[in-house]
Length: 189
Image (cartoon, rainbow, N blue to C red; front, side, top):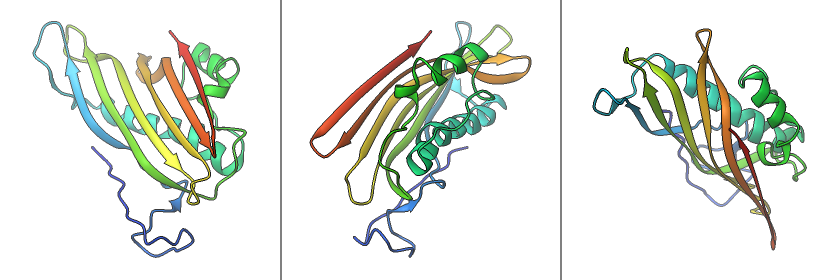
């Protein structure tokens, strides 16, 4: 299932009419651009397993917790029910600057430029996914273009007692404000 966000601008960032680019920050759906299932035993196939819908929802929640909530409230959301405990501990403390868009000017509205994910599942011998990598490319900016956030990375999901959690990640985020550009990276293997 792919959810597509598209818009065009009339130039008035305060307008609430349909067709404007400035949308409520809490309503920014991600677009799945590819979903493949790979296996050493079978040819690559479309990832159509029920786990796909679960992972798509969880990636959306990660986006909301790490990008949307910090940019609109100043504080990041919770990752504990989305990540394994060790990954959540690391993301919430050691890698917080790369994982959360906190300490940035607050926005009530953001302009989405690119909100894409590519899913690649690794199937086990029974054909069911045992690991799924969500490669992400997220770009947003403020309506006045005073802040731009560019985030690229991967979230690795593993199945834990029938549910899917981020167990590893690699993230690079660049925040551009005026003439200042800062890039922060994080890796949890």
